[in-house]
Image 1 (spheres, rainbow, N blue to C red):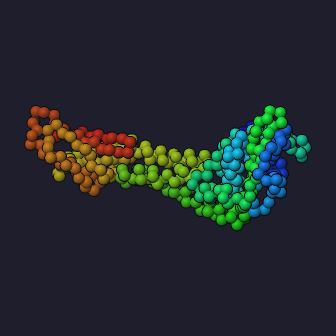
Image 2 (cartoon, rainbow, N blue to C red):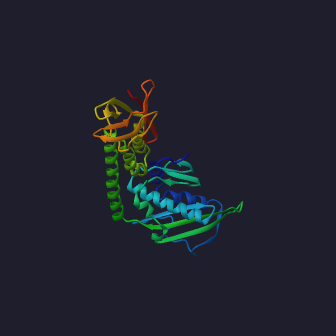
Image 3 (cartoon, one colour):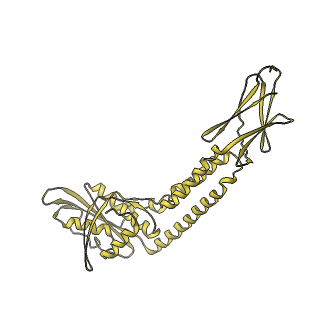
Amino acid sequence: MKIKNISMIAMLARVCGCAVICWMLSATVCAQDYKVVERSQKKVPTWVGNVEENFIIATATDDNLEGAKQKCLDNVKLQIAQSVAQNIEFSSENLIEQLTKGHDVDATAEFRSKSTVQVGALPFISGITFAKASDSYWEKLSEKKSGKIVYSFSVRYPFTKGELYALQEEFNKRDEEMVALVTEMEQNVDEIQSVEEIDACIAKLKPAVEYFFDNARKQWVESVVNRYKKIPALISVEGRNGIDGYIVSLMFKGRKIKTSAMPKMKANCASQLAAKAKGDDIIITYNDEDCLDDEENFIELTFKLPGKQLKHKFFIE
């Protein structure tokens, strides 16, 4: 089966009585017909495979040393992320066969982890590096029957309760800020006052799009972004003759919406075309001296909206 969420990892860890499930998987692999052909230290450090207060112990295997090292670091990130935010998702290709007999658990695994911790913009994840590890250990292993070579990499990474509480506080603060932002922007969708607000609001939501790591809230913020993207399709143009010229209004859900960008204009006979904003409207002025009474005289306006061009054509009397 494929591990889909953090709760499954936690369940396996509790059943197995091991705080570091990845070490359990790797150690099981190593115990099955493998022999050590090379190691980074003469003796296996006492911390490998054990649980230590204020430390995270992680182990991973791969066909090459760098791959095992990177997976090991990913495991550290995953465990820290799990401690800080219990609902963080990750994807993996961990294949686990678990046989339970009474209170004993015999777990075997083919450990091909491609885990990706989706923690968005949380700064503490990017700050997790091997430079901060207190110790590391690796082994080059050979399968006795086939001679296949695999590498096992272990790391001892400091992580105190004080650091955990600080990260939880930071995470909760950031989380609340993002929820408040999306809630505000969602309530503002139908209340925007200008065309320029559309792109500005989408840009304002970008940090939340990048931040949310759980599907439900990611879909929520993406749905709000899509509502803003659909606004141009709901904008129409209304026009009427006025004393100062032809009056044009952009309409959104029955009310006027402003734009700072004046429309492009073309006419079949009129000259001296000009457009200027007046309140929520745009006044179009022109000279029609060259227009003939027996012709269909018109001026066409083109408004450039985000992802759309909006045209309006009116006739000169």
